[in-house]
Structure formats: structure tokens, C-alpha cells
Image (tube, rainbow, N blue to C red; front, side, top):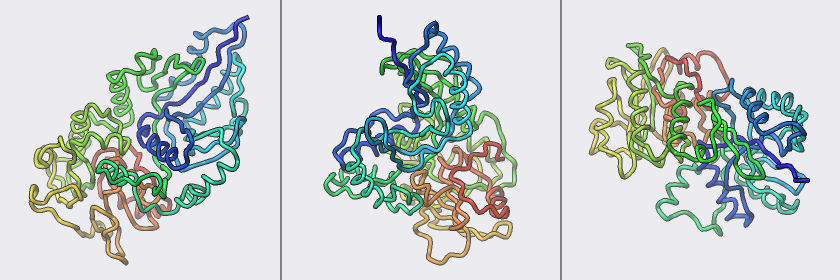
Length: 436
């Protein structure tokens, strides 16, 4: 009698893939253990089909359960550890959103009717551990040694501690050939970033059988799932559905807007900062950034730009991009801006707006100690969201790097509304796509 195939359902981490792989690689170099190569989250299984059910039944049922979702938002939030059936596991911790919890509950209710599963949490969601594996099959002694080292970098229960070195800075050092050798590599900083899942994979005997595309609402064969052009269509559908690519004007003349770190022409920023574009098409990113800006900002509006207009060896003169953008622009100099190319750039700019005192600056670390107003800055992108989230009322800081504000300028009046609301919680991202 043939052995029935074993299946597994996984959520594919695509946008943050590069960053997770880099952390895993550094982890492997530092601790000399094999690490996961393909970032993913196990959603259901491993399982086999009950007698009388086919793969077609399985694919049909999965599609029925997930077609209501355009994407699955979640937060990758530091490191985590557990003891598994075959040893200890260290992983990237995943905080699920409401959509992921709803999807998992529906799988527990429906898929268990015609599958036999051994997956953790497949019968009771309370037992589910949402994570993306870094290393597995570790001994307790291995984990104790590794975790102690991670804790010194803010990687255990102290994940809210400050992280002075950003992921982006480490990547730049590596590009310049200055990245530290593993023997002197002292810190591995945990990742904190919002990820959006738009592909669900089903594996059969550990090989990819098919992927369901949430944005396009269809199953993809293995070859189609690996196609860069098809992935490009999926990513654009995701952007359109989630308000990250505007197609019509939403401008309201008379506003003051803020944004920083557009990095026009910078291909590698797509990987470094998990932007929802494909690295082979930087012109598409530039076009979306330009259109988003011009659909949001009218020619009469003021825009305070927090630096780093463009970057990269293939980027054009900064005025090529600035002259295509609506509004009267007040330019703050970023670390990648050359004042010889763009005249009139300032290091800082201060103003009182609707009775709130603001300082506009590129790098928040350049703020003078004791400043008593609110600081609006860029520079850090989405690389240090423990310390520099979008809205930090405790430190009176606002991060308006492009990745954090939906790739378009946001009104200063909206920021004032947040400040005056008395909301004392950190907001990692500004995800309100209805902002005008």
C-alpha cells in the first residue's frame, strides 16, 4: 500500500525576505548552526488527507477559506524560543493580526474535517505558535548559550530596549567592505517590522505543489509562483488594494505635508526596507512615489521634505525628481543629499503650527538635548521601530520616512490631531489609508 503524501500549508514572507535572510545568515555565522533559508510561517500541518478526499478537494477548500482576504497583516517582532518535538527552536516572533487569527480558526474548523494533522495548534488555536524559524533541532545547552548572547543585543524579553545600530547602517557597511568579521560581530539586532502576506503555499512531500495568490484570487502552479512578472502583478494588486498606490487625486489645497527618505532611483532600498516593489523595476517605484505625491499634494500646498531625495549609482540628478513633484518644497538636507546640487537646503526647520511647536530634521540623533517641542524626522526608515516608530508620544517624535507613511506625504494637521487626541501609545506604522 503506497504511503500517502504529507502536506504542509505555509505563509510566504516575501517583502521582508531579504532582511530575515540577512539576520539568519549572521546568526549562522555567529553561532555556527544551520539556519532557515526560505522565510515562512507554518500555518497548518503537517497533515495527510483522509480516505475519499483528493488534492482538488483540498485546494478548493483552502481557496474557499482564504478568498475573502486581500492580504494578511502581521508583525514580526523580535526573537522567540520554544522546545519542539525534535529539539529546541529559535525563531523570529510573529504577532498575528485579526485576519491571521480568523484564517487559522477557519482552517481548524474546516480542514480538520478531511485531514489528519500533527501540526501544533491545528486543533486548538491556543496551542498555536506563530513564528518564522531561524534555527531548529538545537540542544538546551545550545539555546541557553545563544539566548544569552541575543539578550545582550536586546533579543530576549527586553525587546523594547534601544538599538543604536540600524539594520540599514549594517548593510551599508557590508557594501563598503567594512562589515565586521564573524569573530568580532557582537550584536544581532532583532527585526521589528509589519509584514503583509499575499501568498499561501501548499507543500507536498516538502516540495512546492501550488501557491494561492491572495491579491489576484487564484492558485498558481509552481512555475507561475516563481515568475517575477507574475509576482510584479501580484505586488501591484496588493498596493492598489491597500492604498499604497493611488490612482486619483485626493489633494485638499491649503495643507502642509511632511515626508522623508523617498530614495528615488535606489534599487536596493526595495530589499533593505521591504518596500512593496520588485527590485528589477526601480522605475515603477519611482513612478508610484511620484504619482502618490502628486495625487496627494496640490501645486499650492507646502511640503516639508526631510531629506534623502535620491540615492544609488543609477539615480538621476535630484532636481530631475524634485521638479516633477507638486507643492512648494522646504528641503531639509539628508545624509545622501548634496547641497551643491540643490540650493537652499536647510539642516533644520522650526515652526509653530496649530499651537504645536515642531522641529523638522533629517536624523533624530542630531536633535539638541532637552528640546521641548515635537520632532519630525526621517533617516531611520523602518529599521529601528522600537525606538523610532511612526508616532512616539513619550519621546515626542514622529518618523515620516516614506516606508512608514504609506509612500506619500501626510498632512501636518493629521499629526496635530494625533498629538491633541492624548493617545499615549506608540504607533509603529501609520496604516490609515483614508488619510487625506
